[in-house]
Length: 126
View 1: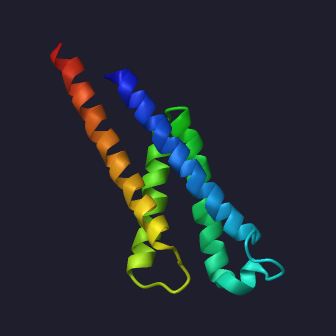
View 2 (view 1 turned 90 degrees about the horizontal axis):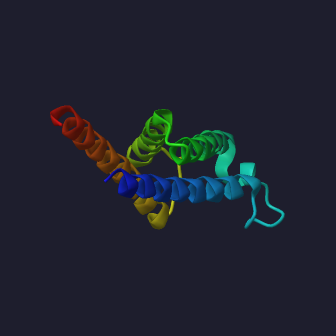
């Protein structure tokens, strides 16, 4: 069972890494041409996106090395970003696909937590 959860954690880490790299490309203005990303996102939006992109990148590394802080960082950053988005904060923008990926990330970490609790209970009863 631990082997399967190890692969699952790595898949979640790759998804978080790709999402963080996508956010970083938005920060760099890869698809904006000559337009400044700060002009498009606004200063506050740029700062929010910077913090969330860095948090996702660090969380993906933490998940890859199976450190507990990776999951905590991923859930905290993604939950805060979703809370800001759902509260209607104008500086937090995401597409429908980005929203779906973030929701999947939070749910997958919760599934990992349930798996870890079950494994711990199974070890205690053995």
